[in-house]
Structures are given as structure tokens and as C-alpha cells.
Length: 269
Image 1: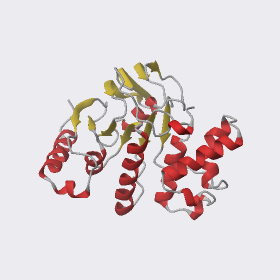
Image 2: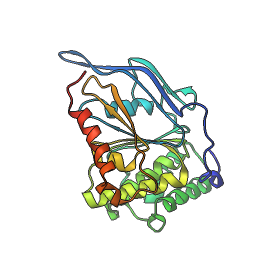
Image 3: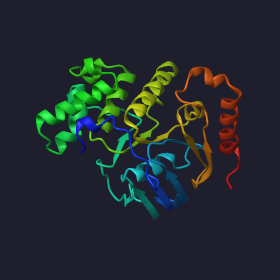
């Protein structure tokens, strides 16, 4: 793990992608026989980039993300992170934030964030210092002693993001983390995530069903086909940063969102 002083250091450009996927296939067994979920997926995510994956329900977006995290095995193909294969969970390289916050109800926000460091038997002073720094980063420095039942849905997700960052991985994967939130909270959490990303310069891969959310957050959007999932479009988002809500009413924003929709609704190829 890197020291706290390095948490906000700008990442140096990498000659290759931070994440490189080639020839990735995934099939799972059912009573009717094997089902091909992903087929020949290839993608590259540059260091420090914010990449969003969208696609129709059941196309394998979450399965792909779990494979990037080392939490699910591929049937074939290769996943490299920082130039080395991902074959199992590696929190030094990859942090994960799930759709549900999954906080331990008997632990405070501080202890929930520090839990991954507790598993690694980091000294108490170190894990508490890092957990406090992450809570400050996500805007919850004053909520360290609260328990999950004392937090709103958005606050719980911020604790979950802080937990994903506490080991300072270069890559952060987020699987529809705001799907259960109301629209107003979801928009506020998108703003919060962009602020955190700007402060840390992590490489982010974010899965969502929301086309508006995808365009608003992303440097680039990867569009997947219906099952078996494949990458059928890689769409750069040239909107300037920092993003603003007013951009959503622009013709360019509408054009980008429509391009995604046209790909998603098209028959599988």
C-alpha cells in the first residue's frame, strides 16, 4: 500500500492500458445446458480514465466487471491489470464497489471502511488513519462513529466507495452503485464520484443501465451487445470537464446518448 501522502498524487501516463482484456469468453451451466454469456470481449482502459460500460439487461456487464475484479473465472481469454494477469481478487490493484453497500451493521462507518485493512492485520493506528482519510475524501469525516442504520442510502454508498479506496488500488470498479437511489440522490452521488475521481485519478470502470449517467460521467462509453455480450461500440465523450448539469440539455449530449440507444436497441449481430 502507498502512504497516505501519495493518495492525491497525479498518476504518470502509462505506455499501455491500465486494463487490457483480450479474447474473453464466459459460459455458465444451466439445467438446459451451457449458456454463452460473453464472447470474444476485447477492451483497453487507459490509466486514469473514467470508462463506463452499458448494454441491455442480461448482456454480461456485471459478469465482465466481476472478472476484472478476479471474482469470477473466464472460460477463455486474458485480463491484465497494470501489466499482470488478474486471476484472483487483488485489492492492491483493484477495488470494487457493489450495487448494495453491504456494510456490517455492527460496525461504525470508520470500522466498515477499515475492515479490509483489519483482514490484512494492518496496525490499528494505520488502518484508522487511512479509514479517516477516506471518509474525509468522500465527505463523511463527521460520520465516522455512526452505524449503518444512522446513514442515508447515499451516505452508505459513500462509505462503500471509501472502503473500496482504503487500500489505495490504482483501479476502482463500480457495479451500478447508485441503482437503488432516487434520481436526486443519484445525480448528487455522480457529482461526488467525479470529485473523488478528480482528487485520486484512479482508473475507473463503472457499470450502469442509465444512458444519461453514462454520458455525464464518462471519458468513454463501451457499449455491449445482447447476450452473448460483446463490445460493439467504443464511444469517446468529448464533453469538457468539469461536467455540469446544463450539459445534459445540449445537442451534443443528446447526440451521444442517442448513439448509445441506437446500439443497444439494435438486434444482436
